[in-house]
Amino acid sequence: MWLLYASGSAFFAGITSILAKCGIKKTDSTVATAVRTVVILIFSWLIVLASGSGYQISAISKKTLIFLVLSGAATGASWLCYFRALQLGDINKVVPIDKSSTVLTIFLALIFLHEGLSIFKFFAVFMIAAGILLMIEKKDVSKGKKGEGQWFLYAWGSAFFASLTAILGKVGISGVDSNLGTAIRTTIVLIMACLMVFISGRKNELCRIPKKEFIFIFASGLATGASWLCYYGALQDGPASVVAPVDKLSVLVTVLFSYIVFGEKLSKKSSLGLGLLVFGTILILASS
Image (tube, rainbow, N blue to C red; front, side, top):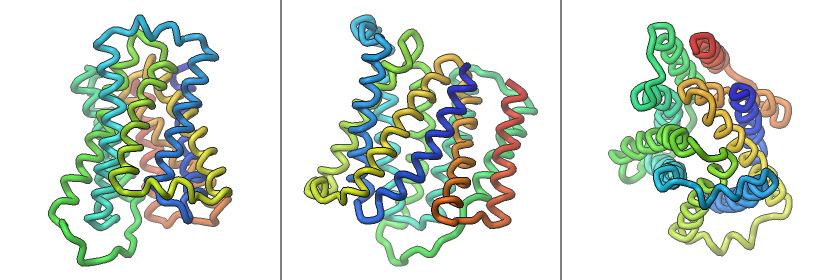
């Protein structure tokens, strides 16, 4: 069942990327993120009410609550670091480091969750890492940005906090319904997303979102909410070192729909990287 949830997480995450791209043509991405998080929050709490797991709130242990809050804070911190790194550095340098969160998650799960390490799994992780790097296409970027020596730290901060999200979330949902855990975590993410909007001085742009783009942003929020619910449902019963790479197979969905909707095609290099990513994930599943 956890594998089914992980596959669902990958599917909805892939759909999210397409919907989000349609919703930020004119809308600032930080503002769109805040709006999407509001949708995710409402969606997740409605699921909690529908599933009847709300009664567990009073029974949540202090340790579980702390880890859920830390998981949400890690997600917010990852977003802050990622956008700051993109502001200071070249995108073709920042993105590969950020994508390495998948590999970091696997190794952190092996170290802190004691999920086991074998030569077979190590080889699979190496293939996933190689695949991610090959899929990154170089793009033209502006020159002369300030703080060129800082982007490296922010990029690694983004990857590190993204990997911590899965590890902390895995610990945080032990003994609590995954839907309720997702709702609590999303509340923390919303607080950080709103802070991002106010700190960046873009609060006035919330009222200027085009109607069509708002619909796409709203839909991407629903897709993200569904992805998160599936992801934490998978983490509750499955190993984080396997759930994380399966979730990253969302790139397959994104590639398919980006071709259908936007006519975008993969280069030979990216296609090879995608093949390594998929094959490495299959190897991890086979070894679990």
